Image (tube, rainbow, N blue to C red; front, side, top):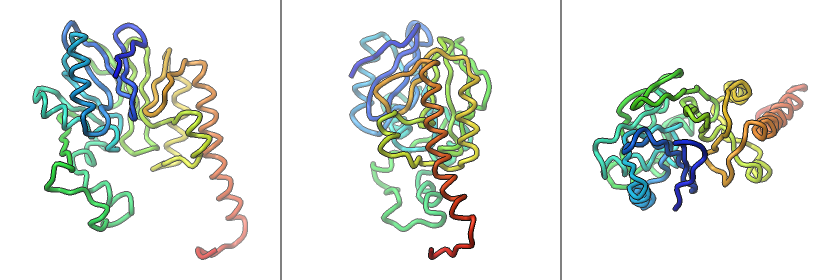
Length: 249
Protein backbone atom coordinates (compact mmCIF):
# COMPACT_ATOMS: atom_id res chain seq x y z
CA UNK A 1 0.00 0.00 0.00
CA UNK A 2 1.39 3.39 -1.05
CA UNK A 3 0.34 6.98 -0.52
CA UNK A 4 0.61 8.56 -3.97
CA UNK A 5 0.82 12.34 -4.27
CA UNK A 6 -1.21 13.84 -7.11
CA UNK A 7 -0.62 17.52 -6.39
CA UNK A 8 -0.09 19.67 -3.30
CA UNK A 9 -1.90 18.14 -0.32
CA UNK A 10 -4.02 15.75 -2.40
CA UNK A 11 -3.08 12.06 -2.51
CA UNK A 12 -4.68 8.72 -3.23
CA UNK A 13 -4.22 5.07 -2.30
CA UNK A 14 -4.67 2.56 -5.11
CA UNK A 15 -6.87 -0.43 -4.43
CA UNK A 16 -9.94 -2.36 -5.50
CA UNK A 17 -11.57 0.95 -4.65
CA UNK A 18 -9.26 3.96 -4.87
CA UNK A 19 -9.19 6.04 -1.70
CA UNK A 20 -8.57 9.79 -1.78
CA UNK A 21 -6.48 11.43 0.95
CA UNK A 22 -6.32 15.18 1.55
CA UNK A 23 -4.05 16.65 4.20
CA UNK A 24 -6.06 19.27 6.09
CA UNK A 25 -3.27 20.61 8.33
CA UNK A 26 -0.08 19.35 9.99
CA UNK A 27 -1.83 16.38 11.60
CA UNK A 28 -5.33 15.77 10.22
CA UNK A 29 -6.65 14.48 6.93
CA UNK A 30 -9.84 13.75 5.04
CA UNK A 31 -10.26 10.49 3.16
CA UNK A 32 -12.67 9.74 0.33
CA UNK A 33 -14.15 6.23 -0.09
CA UNK A 34 -12.30 3.91 2.33
CA UNK A 35 -13.41 0.81 0.40
CA UNK A 36 -14.61 -2.59 1.62
CA UNK A 37 -14.49 -3.49 5.31
CA UNK A 38 -11.28 -5.38 6.02
CA UNK A 39 -7.59 -5.23 6.80
CA UNK A 40 -7.17 -2.35 4.35
CA UNK A 41 -8.32 0.16 6.96
CA UNK A 42 -5.71 -0.89 9.56
CA UNK A 43 -2.99 -0.68 6.91
CA UNK A 44 -4.34 2.70 5.86
CA UNK A 45 -4.14 4.07 9.40
CA UNK A 46 -0.53 2.85 9.72
CA UNK A 47 0.40 4.36 6.35
CA UNK A 48 -1.12 7.70 7.26
CA UNK A 49 0.57 7.61 10.67
CA UNK A 50 3.93 7.20 8.92
CA UNK A 51 3.09 10.39 7.02
CA UNK A 52 2.00 12.28 10.17
CA UNK A 53 -1.70 12.14 9.36
CA UNK A 54 -4.73 11.15 11.41
CA UNK A 55 -8.14 10.73 9.78
CA UNK A 56 -10.60 13.40 10.88
CA UNK A 57 -13.26 13.13 8.15
CA UNK A 58 -14.50 10.52 5.70
CA UNK A 59 -16.56 11.49 2.65
CA UNK A 60 -18.38 8.67 0.88
CA UNK A 61 -19.10 9.43 -2.78
CA UNK A 62 -22.16 7.17 -2.86
CA UNK A 63 -24.16 4.40 -1.25
CA UNK A 64 -22.41 1.26 -2.55
CA UNK A 65 -20.65 -0.92 0.01
CA UNK A 66 -17.40 -1.23 -1.92
CA UNK A 67 -16.94 2.50 -1.31
CA UNK A 68 -18.38 3.22 2.16
CA UNK A 69 -18.16 -0.08 4.09
CA UNK A 70 -14.70 0.56 5.52
CA UNK A 71 -16.00 3.72 7.21
CA UNK A 72 -17.36 1.65 10.08
CA UNK A 73 -14.01 -0.09 10.56
CA UNK A 74 -12.17 3.23 10.71
CA UNK A 75 -14.77 4.60 13.14
CA UNK A 76 -14.20 1.59 15.41
CA UNK A 77 -10.47 2.30 15.37
CA UNK A 78 -10.97 6.04 15.94
CA UNK A 79 -14.34 7.18 17.25
CA UNK A 80 -13.48 10.85 16.63
CA UNK A 81 -13.80 10.42 12.86
CA UNK A 82 -16.77 12.19 11.27
CA UNK A 83 -18.49 10.32 8.41
CA UNK A 84 -20.08 12.48 5.70
CA UNK A 85 -22.28 11.78 2.67
CA UNK A 86 -25.17 13.19 0.66
CA UNK A 87 -28.65 12.93 2.19
CA UNK A 88 -29.71 10.37 -0.44
CA UNK A 89 -26.67 8.18 0.17
CA UNK A 90 -27.14 8.37 3.95
CA UNK A 91 -30.47 6.52 3.71
CA UNK A 92 -28.81 3.37 2.39
CA UNK A 93 -25.50 3.70 4.23
CA UNK A 94 -27.39 3.91 7.53
CA UNK A 95 -29.80 1.12 6.50
CA UNK A 96 -27.86 -1.36 4.33
CA UNK A 97 -30.70 -3.90 4.35
CA UNK A 98 -32.83 -1.43 2.41
CA UNK A 99 -30.32 -1.50 -0.43
CA UNK A 100 -31.31 -5.03 -1.45
CA UNK A 101 -34.99 -3.99 -1.45
CA UNK A 102 -34.40 -1.06 -3.76
CA UNK A 103 -32.15 -3.12 -6.03
CA UNK A 104 -34.89 -5.70 -6.74
CA UNK A 105 -37.78 -3.21 -6.63
CA UNK A 106 -39.49 -4.78 -3.62
CA UNK A 107 -38.85 -6.73 -0.44
CA UNK A 108 -35.75 -8.84 -0.98
CA UNK A 109 -35.47 -12.43 0.23
CA UNK A 110 -33.15 -13.40 3.07
CA UNK A 111 -30.39 -14.53 0.71
CA UNK A 112 -30.02 -11.00 -0.65
CA UNK A 113 -30.14 -9.36 2.76
CA UNK A 114 -27.14 -8.43 4.85
CA UNK A 115 -26.80 -10.34 8.13
CA UNK A 116 -28.25 -7.77 10.51
CA UNK A 117 -26.89 -9.18 13.75
CA UNK A 118 -23.40 -10.18 12.67
CA UNK A 119 -20.11 -8.43 12.07
CA UNK A 120 -20.72 -8.89 8.35
CA UNK A 121 -23.27 -6.08 8.38
CA UNK A 122 -20.47 -3.57 9.16
CA UNK A 123 -22.98 -1.05 10.45
CA UNK A 124 -22.10 2.48 9.38
CA UNK A 125 -23.86 5.66 10.48
CA UNK A 126 -23.36 8.94 8.65
CA UNK A 127 -22.65 11.76 11.12
CA UNK A 128 -23.34 14.72 8.84
CA UNK A 129 -24.96 15.41 5.49
CA UNK A 130 -23.14 17.49 2.89
CA UNK A 131 -24.98 19.41 0.20
CA UNK A 132 -23.90 20.52 -3.25
CA UNK A 133 -21.73 23.62 -3.14
CA UNK A 134 -18.64 24.86 -1.34
CA UNK A 135 -17.72 23.52 2.10
CA UNK A 136 -14.81 24.15 4.47
CA UNK A 137 -13.18 21.44 6.61
CA UNK A 138 -10.35 22.54 8.90
CA UNK A 139 -9.93 25.71 6.82
CA UNK A 140 -9.52 23.69 3.60
CA UNK A 141 -12.00 24.48 0.85
CA UNK A 142 -13.82 21.78 -1.13
CA UNK A 143 -16.58 21.81 -3.70
CA UNK A 144 -19.25 19.13 -3.53
CA UNK A 145 -20.80 18.34 -6.92
CA UNK A 146 -24.04 16.39 -7.30
CA UNK A 147 -23.40 13.55 -9.76
CA UNK A 148 -26.61 11.52 -9.67
CA UNK A 149 -27.11 8.70 -12.12
CA UNK A 150 -24.96 5.76 -11.06
CA UNK A 151 -26.88 6.11 -7.81
CA UNK A 152 -29.27 8.79 -6.59
CA UNK A 153 -26.86 9.97 -3.91
CA UNK A 154 -23.63 10.12 -5.91
CA UNK A 155 -21.39 13.15 -5.44
CA UNK A 156 -18.01 14.34 -6.64
CA UNK A 157 -15.43 16.16 -4.53
CA UNK A 158 -13.15 18.88 -5.94
CA UNK A 159 -10.16 19.78 -3.75
CA UNK A 160 -8.48 23.18 -3.63
CA UNK A 161 -5.57 21.52 -5.48
CA UNK A 162 -8.03 21.11 -8.39
CA UNK A 163 -8.20 17.32 -8.08
CA UNK A 164 -11.65 15.86 -8.78
CA UNK A 165 -12.81 12.59 -7.20
CA UNK A 166 -15.83 11.21 -9.08
CA UNK A 167 -16.54 7.85 -7.44
CA UNK A 168 -18.23 5.53 -9.95
CA UNK A 169 -19.38 8.16 -12.43
CA UNK A 170 -16.86 6.65 -14.85
CA UNK A 171 -15.10 3.32 -15.19
CA UNK A 172 -11.67 2.74 -16.68
CA UNK A 173 -11.22 2.35 -20.43
CA UNK A 174 -10.48 -1.38 -20.27
CA UNK A 175 -13.48 -2.04 -18.05
CA UNK A 176 -15.75 -0.03 -20.35
CA UNK A 177 -14.62 -2.11 -23.33
CA UNK A 178 -15.53 -5.33 -21.50
CA UNK A 179 -18.67 -4.11 -19.71
CA UNK A 180 -20.24 -1.25 -21.64
CA UNK A 181 -23.68 -1.78 -20.07
CA UNK A 182 -23.18 0.53 -17.09
CA UNK A 183 -24.88 0.12 -13.72
CA UNK A 184 -27.21 3.13 -13.67
CA UNK A 185 -30.01 4.22 -11.37
CA UNK A 186 -31.22 7.04 -13.64
CA UNK A 187 -30.06 7.31 -17.26
CA UNK A 188 -31.15 10.93 -17.79
CA UNK A 189 -29.51 12.13 -14.56
CA UNK A 190 -26.40 10.15 -15.41
CA UNK A 191 -25.97 11.85 -18.78
CA UNK A 192 -26.55 15.24 -17.13
CA UNK A 193 -23.84 14.45 -14.58
CA UNK A 194 -21.38 13.28 -17.21
CA UNK A 195 -21.87 16.46 -19.22
CA UNK A 196 -21.46 18.52 -16.03
CA UNK A 197 -17.83 17.36 -15.79
CA UNK A 198 -16.98 19.31 -18.96
CA UNK A 199 -17.55 22.63 -17.20
CA UNK A 200 -15.63 21.88 -13.99
CA UNK A 201 -12.22 23.51 -13.57
CA UNK A 202 -9.97 20.64 -12.52
CA UNK A 203 -6.47 19.42 -13.39
CA UNK A 204 -6.75 15.70 -12.59
CA UNK A 205 -9.63 13.30 -12.12
CA UNK A 206 -9.60 10.18 -9.91
CA UNK A 207 -12.01 7.31 -10.65
CA UNK A 208 -13.24 4.85 -8.06
CA UNK A 209 -11.93 1.81 -9.92
CA UNK A 210 -8.99 2.44 -12.23
CA UNK A 211 -5.21 2.20 -12.06
CA UNK A 212 -4.73 5.58 -13.73
CA UNK A 213 -5.66 9.17 -12.99
CA UNK A 214 -6.71 11.46 -15.83
CA UNK A 215 -5.91 15.01 -16.85
CA UNK A 216 -8.62 17.46 -17.85
CA UNK A 217 -7.69 16.90 -21.50
CA UNK A 218 -7.81 13.10 -21.17
CA UNK A 219 -11.19 13.29 -19.44
CA UNK A 220 -12.86 14.43 -22.66
CA UNK A 221 -12.29 11.02 -24.25
CA UNK A 222 -13.66 9.27 -21.16
CA UNK A 223 -16.75 11.49 -21.21
CA UNK A 224 -17.41 10.84 -24.89
CA UNK A 225 -16.91 7.07 -24.54
CA UNK A 226 -19.37 6.84 -21.65
CA UNK A 227 -21.99 8.93 -23.45
CA UNK A 228 -21.60 6.70 -26.52
CA UNK A 229 -21.94 3.53 -24.42
CA UNK A 230 -25.19 4.75 -22.85
CA UNK A 231 -26.65 6.07 -26.10
CA UNK A 232 -25.87 2.77 -27.81
CA UNK A 233 -28.31 0.96 -25.51
CA UNK A 234 -30.83 3.80 -25.49
CA UNK A 235 -30.93 3.69 -29.30
CA UNK A 236 -31.36 -0.10 -29.26
CA UNK A 237 -34.43 0.30 -27.04
CA UNK A 238 -35.82 3.06 -29.27
CA UNK A 239 -35.37 0.85 -32.34
CA UNK A 240 -37.22 -2.01 -30.65
CA UNK A 241 -40.10 0.30 -29.76
CA UNK A 242 -40.66 1.52 -33.32
CA UNK A 243 -43.07 -1.37 -33.78
CA UNK A 244 -45.58 -2.85 -31.29
CA UNK A 245 -43.91 -5.45 -29.09
CA UNK A 246 -45.01 -7.59 -26.15
CA UNK A 247 -43.08 -8.06 -22.92
CA UNK A 248 -42.51 -11.71 -23.86
CA UNK A 249 -40.75 -10.66 -27.04
